[in-house]
Amino acid sequence: MSEALFNALEALGAGARYFFSPPGIPNLVMVMASLGMFWLAIRKGVEPLLLLPIGFGCLLVNLPLSDVMDQEGFLRVLFEMGIGNELFPLLIFIGIGAMTDFTPLLEQPKLILFGAAGQLGIFLTLMVALALGFPKALAVSVATIGACDGPTVIYVSNLFAGKGMIDPSMVGALAVAAYSYMALVPIIQPPIMRLMTTAKERATPMPPGKFQVPANALVLFPILVTILTGIIAPKGLPLMGAIMLGNFLKVSGVVSRLTKASENEIANVSTLFLGLAIGGTMAGPEFLKPQTLLVFALGLMAIVVDTVGGLLLGKIWYLLSGGKMNPLIGAAGISAYPMAARIVQTEGLRYNHQNHLLMHAMGANTGGQIGSVMAASIMLAILKGMGMI
Image (tube, rainbow, N blue to C red; front, side, top):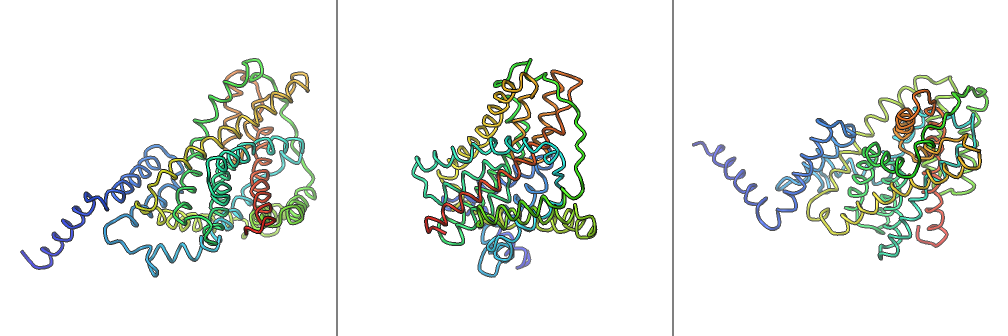
């Protein structure tokens, strides 16, 4: 047997012994978790664009003697260049803005009320987390899972991690929770929708709608929202500004190359690097804590309460309109765009095959995008006013 082969076998044995030793068991658990992410992404189609890179980063950082998150390690470099300074989430938001159509919302501005009601889970979860003894910064970070928007969670939590206000390892837990619940929206929402509404309410017909908005209004909208955010909650201006920049590039109609790059190359590369860097924060000993499990539980509560809040407003609106507003549209008031709107359409068609809920739900859904970023911005503004950031 050659010396090189002997050394390789010895290293393999040392790695196996490490995994099954007490210090190595958390790493082994996280390796199994990474394999679970691969299975969900490949076999079940659950957020593959995110779970594959996150899972691979998690695998890399949990292997014996791995140095990928050391000072000059591969994943550490990615983390510092795009998460440590909040760059990757903002680049992804530009892409999201370029892919978003605000026409349904502008045709019926009242639908933004659903976007506000769909953020109820954020504030209720914040209060529960504080009552459980979470530090303020971590409580806010956990509450933003209710935004149902992964980049928002990463931006807010990493802002606090960079200031030493939360453990950097929690950024990975928060990101995984956020993206997991985004992927599970089609499973989480329908039972709540059926529980809170009657068959008659779900069958309420909605007119198709013209959904035609003057081009000038589409161009002015991102500008006005950016200005309004800068006045009301300037701490959240990078988030809202990035979304509105992407949308402004699209509706201006004069920079198709930048719009396509924002939707594709920039968003895709940023998503890849962000996923790898987030996975790199999921080292077993730091990630596997009771607090992490509590974060996942609170995140689920936030999504559920968001859905309940939107449906409650929908039921009130149904009564006040004399049965003309389908309350299912309220469930689209979260930021999972356009997934939540499609779920509303699917549920509505189950009870009325001639229903036209999609474009109305899209209006509520885009309102939810704005509402989630505004909610996070307001919480950041409050913390800034308290001198915490």
